[in-house]
Length: 160
Image 1 (cartoon, rainbow, N blue to C red):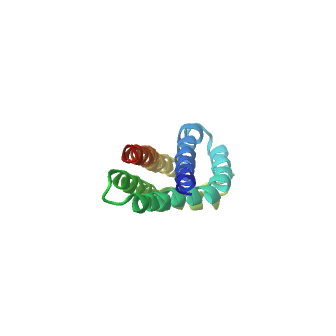
Image 2: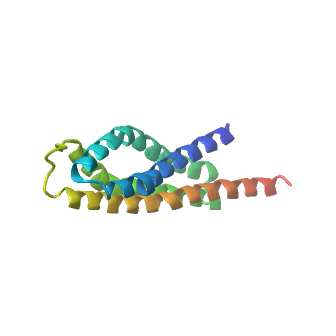
């Protein structure tokens, strides 16, 4: 049961971090090269794909890290690693909601043919904050893997 839970936590974290990386390296870079109408239409369509999915996996990754920290014991090295990873995922949310998510909602209402004059500044702001939140997500996932590995190493040495 514990192994299944750990795998589910790692899956949520991998999906959260992977989604953010794909959006940064693949989609974000492409978005920065598009004309205004192509950018607005593309961003609106990607919002329809990512907006329902990302909150579930990011919040799941955060909650899973908190649960791992409690399960491993917050005073143990694996528990502290899991807690540190959860803090990183909390920063993903703290950074993303007032910036990227808010901008996504604004772009969703834009006219493809007549976007606001400040569309380029909004695009640059979205990309900048998306990169920042992704840079918190990558170490979060890595720290979760280290927490699981160190817990496994601790358990293996206890059973010898």
